[in-house]
Image 1 (tube, helix red, strand yellow):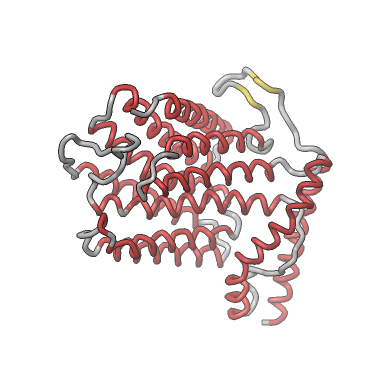
Image 2 (spheres, rainbow, N blue to C red):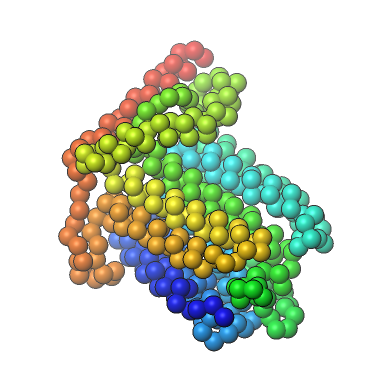
Length: 373
C-alpha cells in the first residue's frame, strides 16, 4: 500500500499555491492568475484523493474525483493560464501546434486495444482540434488578442464534456482499478470516449505550459541570434510560411547559444528574474508530464514522486519571479513574510533594451513590408 505522505505533501503545496494565485488575482485581476489557481486547485484535489486513498483505501468516489481532476483537467487548465498570460504575443502559433498534435495523437491511438470500440469519436476530436488550431493560428497571424478565448473554448468545452461523460458512466465493482505491483490508480475502468479526452487536454496543456515557460525565458534572456527568422505578417506569404517552419529550430538554436550569456548575466546580477523563474516552471511542468506518460504505459513507480517534484518546481519558479511575487505575504492579509523586492537596475535595463529592440525590428519589418507591397 503506498504511503500517504508524498501525495499529502503534494496536495498541501498545490493548495497553498492555488490560494496565493487566487490572492494575486484578487489584487491584480489578471485572468491567467485565476485560471492557474483553478488548475492548481485541481492538482491539489487529485493529490488529495491519492492521499486519502493511501490512508483509508480507494473507493469509487475517490477514483472518479482523482481521474477528472488529475488525469483530465489539471494540465489543460494550467496550459490555458499560459495562453492568457502570453495572449499578446505570437505564442498563439505554438498553442495551435499543441492543439493540432493533441488531436492527431487522439486520432492515431484509436486502434490501440484500450481505445478499441471508440467509433468515430477519435475522428471527431481530431477535426475539432484541427479547426480550433487553425482558428488560433489565424487570429495570431492577424495579431488579434482573442486567440486565448478560443483556447478557453476548447478547454472549457472538453471539461464540460468530461463531466457529462463521467456522470453517464457506470463502473464495475469495486469501482476502481489499481496497479497490482505498486497500488497506484490506473484508468482502465473508464470508457474509451472519456479516456480519449485525456490526451486531448494533457498534450495541449502540458506542451503549452512547458513551451510557454521556455518562450518567456527566451524573451527575457540576453540573446545571441545564430539563426534569424521573422514572423511579421507583412512579409510575402511564401516567405512567412518558410519563417514559420524554421522558427522552432531557430528559437531552439538561439536559446542554447544564449545560455552562456545568460549565465554570465546571472552571476553579474543583470539577469531578469523571469528567466530563472520560467526555467524552473518549465522543469516543473516537464517532470509530471514524463511520469504521467509512464503511468499511462503501465510504469507507475515514479507517479507520486513526479507530481510532488512538479508542484515544488512550479511553486519555486513563481516565487523566484519578482514580477509575479513582488512581496511574499500570507494570502488575503497584510502580513509580509518578506519585504517587497525589485529587479536590479541592470536587469530592468537589459529587459527594456530587449523589448525596445524587438519593437524596432518589428517596426522596420512592417515598413519594409509596406514599402514592398
